[in-house]
Image 1 (cartoon, rainbow, N blue to C red):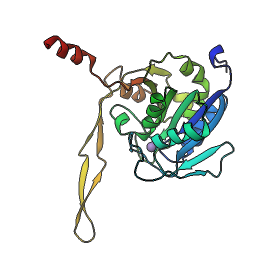
Image 2: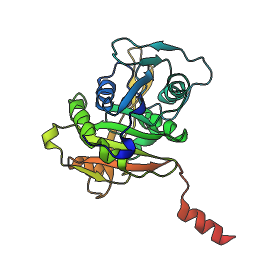
Image 3: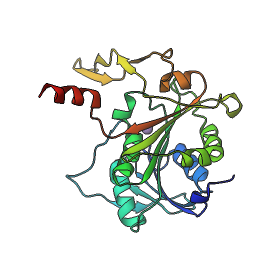
Length: 261
Ligand code: MN
């Protein structure tokens, strides 16, 4: 692997996820990043998927050294946002060069980004002014293999490309890798955020005592024909790479509103 001159020194890397410290995708990401520099891991002590960009404020955060790791790894009783902030304070007090979040066991396409704890890890890194990436395996059938080995291989091969991409202030990379065997990958595509909405989101059921409860899930509706969107890319076996800006301002409307003054 040849890296840009700029990235040739060992990088200081912080890794987190939202699937928890024991998730196989986290280990795959740590292995993939180990060739880039010094990796430290700070991740939730249990699965916190779909926690979004929440943070823990009303209770103390406890940090413990995690077992089963050959590099510095810590588990936190919090969410990815907490983990990034604890990691930056305690593990990399001098700052770090790269924050990676993942590899998530499931896609983070379209509006998923707003629910995603994986994306939130990268968002928090971005807010701290550090180059950040959220990485997910696009699995669409529950219990289908996640193919983390595909993600790991693809990342190792593509770090120079990914680290060479110019980034703007407040922008991170959201990367979705199709959950298929490596030889089946159809390269990568730079794409926009697609539309992925959930139908029949809340299901009403009854417990054994006849009391109703509700379970959120629902069928995902997405339009893979929307060429140029992340959903389109992964449905064609391509790794989807999207630059996501934390500036949610609609500039076109803002300009239009100002014209009315
Ligand atoms: Mn997750």
